[in-house]
Image (cartoon, rainbow, N blue to C red; front, top):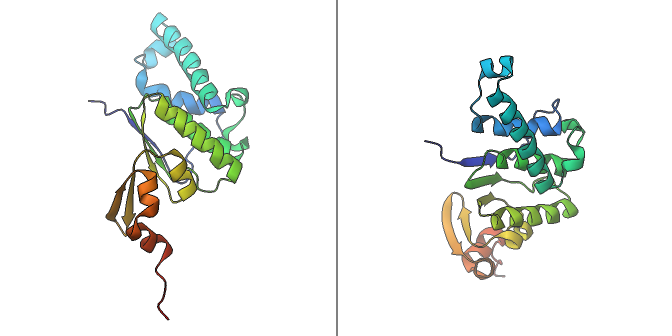
Length: 180
């Protein structure tokens, strides 16, 4: 049974020597039926799936804003674009749940703002996004519901505004004042 879960990793895991579009096509592999023999013989099934995969790849590249970089090598992309490529590849698997592990790590403020917009569009498309992130401005900018862990123990759960005011969260992440 397919679980329809996809994820990205804190450390980017692209195929750096492949083109951008080839990286996304790898995400489509599990959604095709043609086999090696179909490929070798260029059967109608193979040709249909190749056309579908090309269309689907460019749809996801457009969704993340990389359609103009399709024939570039993945390693040539800026860091934030590599993150978006990794997300496009994950989306190509047609997940119902997308897990993003520290997606804002290493991004500059402009890239983070773009990431927040992209994750909002993913969420608005009906895909559930589980976001593991330490950058609170990013978390607060995109989350509907937040669970806060302190050393692996859940200390709070709720809407962003409630989390910001929660004394356990404030103490865990900002510390408490020393009485003098």
